[in-house]
Length: 149
Image (tube, rainbow, N blue to C red):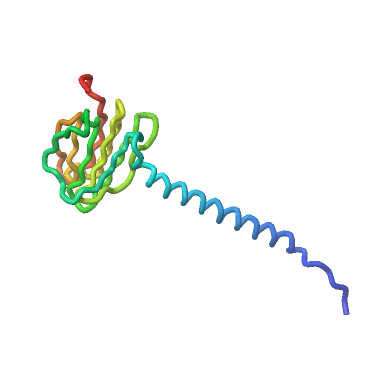
């Protein structure tokens, strides 16, 4: 019978298990932050107000509860409306699909907007309806807050 010796891969196995645990923890942290950021986007004062509504409004006027019109308001008219809005050179405010009747409003002074299909949404710039684009056409544009608001 020969001598017993320790397995030379013992330390390597421990290192692999440790690395797997660190990677699992990192995935959990990233997932939790992404989940919390979707919930956090509805907080007052964040400039974002995505609100699902039972029925979309054809023409919306600002009510007494809203003293000023948002710089951009996007209302989804289809089952799925891919929308991307960001502050130029800064924060991404939304990059997701809205569902029918859902809307998002932003009050920042300047915004970049990208719509994958411009015909699926109704866009209001400073309270004024923007003409819809052709069906299936991607549209990218910038909006600045009007001086009177």
